[in-house]
Image (cartoon, rainbow, N blue to C red):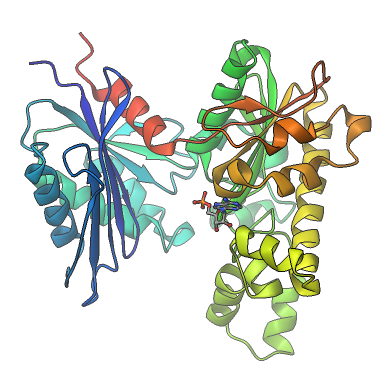
Length: 402
Ligand code: AMP
């Protein structure tokens, strides 16, 4: 039997998301989430064709080991057990691959220790990713396990975009540079945008706007990333659900010296209590739009700040790329908020950018154009699919492709 299935794992500090994909027809056999790991009220949500509308159960799940065992039980209950000879490989989302990992990589001891070495630059994510990998290795030690890095797509950035203008020796000693994140999404969406235009990725320049709870922009020239808005960590760049994005770094010294805050307190402030939630108390764009419709000034200001920053990045990346063929909106906000898309592009007609109100208002599933007929630059909504991209890359590297 040819092994044609890939299990994709995205292990966070207190959750594991999983998807089992069939690569022959790119279908999703099962998806699920184990959350609140380590608490009494852990929850497993599981969906598959056999599970109908899906199943949910709560109860204590002590650690990642128990979480992956819970996942394995759910899959087995639907006849999709991990012992299946049809399973070709397991693909792991790994947040930080530093400069070292420029491509998806089959995991061995050297790879594990390199991911571990990167913990100082990704203290929240890489330890959780490592735990997920090590646990999955014990479940199926015979299978290839592949790491797909969030940073990999951005390793093509030139030094002029990747370096901060700080003392070079200090930067290098501490591996301080702009790595960028959401790379799997930027890679997938830029390629899908080219496909939507009926052109090869090497023939188009695309600005990708990944607007989810986390948000980032990238400038992609001929299929290669030349700039992106996130930096050493995902804190830099756009205004996000709970992150500030760009800010004068002196705000941090000021908060330390004058505000008496510690580094950890400022870290939490900027990553968890800033952005939209800091500005107006909500980080869900649906709720913010609802409040704006009711005349809420604070929500309106938060929206305006969000759009102002987004517009600056669109303008900047038009300048970085020179020739722009398409701007693609993706992720939760980008795919669903017609208001954000219209506001971000409003007034950019001199750059060749415009949104057709009717097209923009249509809710659809797949990739679609929202710019007017004959526009110089295509504006598109291109749904992202990070799991499918991880599965595709994993299968290409480790699948039994005979
Ligand atoms: P993501 O991180 O890509 O899952 O995106 C999550 C975010 O998408 C949420 O926090 C919302 O702000 C936003 N979102 C999801 N659905 C909608 C919608 N129908 N309209 C506007 N924003 C949405």
